[in-house]
Length: 593
Image (cartoon, rainbow, N blue to C red; front, side, top):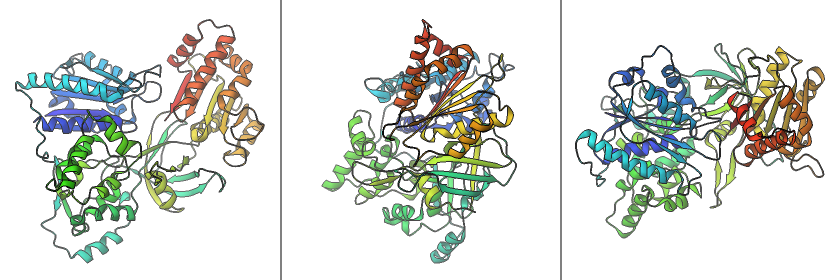
């Protein structure tokens, strides 16, 4: 068995892993795909011979959350140098060379596998988002070499044959042992309640508050969510809380209606065959589970379709008519690396969803029930930085609701925030999990360095948690918050709290309002520059720790350029090196998405 392990924060590395698995099946090579941390360690040690590692880099050279547990184990000092000498492997990294720690995650993983005795059987590759052909160009070349080397290992010529759909590794079928009246089963489905609560791997919490924190006339609804765990929990500032959204009932019905043959069995009990089903956060209770329930709780029908899905879908189109042949050929093009513009124009640019895709091709496409679990992506948890200091079993979150119109003028709403806004109310019980990330606010030789926090928008969440933590533990520790919003009347969150901190601790707020007429500074980098003497003093003389949290893109880059220029203007000749040393020593930290 060929094994493919991925570490993925936003889903890109997982998409490439699943696409590779589909491609290999058409080459006649079966493979098993899993997130790093979902793969049983004993299988890595005992029966893994050929291995592919695919991983993105998050933050400042960090591994994605679903790759850290396994990697922590592999970093143990007591592991012998021949611990993985039975494994031959290759790796594929996803990164952006505009960031200083380009592809650090896959480099660390690859290096550690070599240190533990694993051997390369095919060249590794580091894809660059900034490359002329993008990650696809790197992937295509890497896959070609991988297939060539794999054929040599298996001692046979691998020939690509996709004339027939591959047999699913995990299939669903009607349960032959349960003959239940459809109307009765549908009623049971309605009475089943929230099956999310049957996911035994997750924690549960009561929703104490789920309110809009911005004014009604502000363009974005930002939610202030307060949860209280039903069991004891432990976390620190910087840790994250994962929520597990579900599809709304109308979207599920629309999806089922797009394949009318599903409707007749949508509420009948199913069984799984083949490999056990897996999902982020574990499966709902599968006893008597129905297709409707699987779609609602596990299938990500509002995500943008990827190549791996199209590689399956085109096989299910009846090409006997002119329209059918055209649609089949179009779906096949979307699955091929040779036509990157086709899939971009159809799916990515207009943000078209899987639900819409199935609807648009429904006249000639019939997807067999047995393939449903195999081909459609699963709902992934959404990670949010905790916005409060530890306070018993209580957790606070700050979440921006995603709502916009696509170029097709269709309203698009984020799955998680739509669920949170429309389906989650005060008093409800939901499932969640915690992930350790942690923000340090001490240095080895300085137990209370100044903290400079830069937070536009919802990036305020971990900064609030950090400020509260410091205020409780060491109120004399100096803190400076550069908080960027549009104006002070509509989206300036927690104003009374900042005022209280300024009055009772060594905390200074530097507000930045980008849409307040006549106000300066407008943006967080402007605020840093206006206070450059103080910022330079804190960094160069007092060893301040510098935090940046917010959306990726221009803000973090401009912030780093501003800090570099401030340091350079203060007389440091090699300012870029100084900032890089800050990163290496844990004094310049970014959390961007």
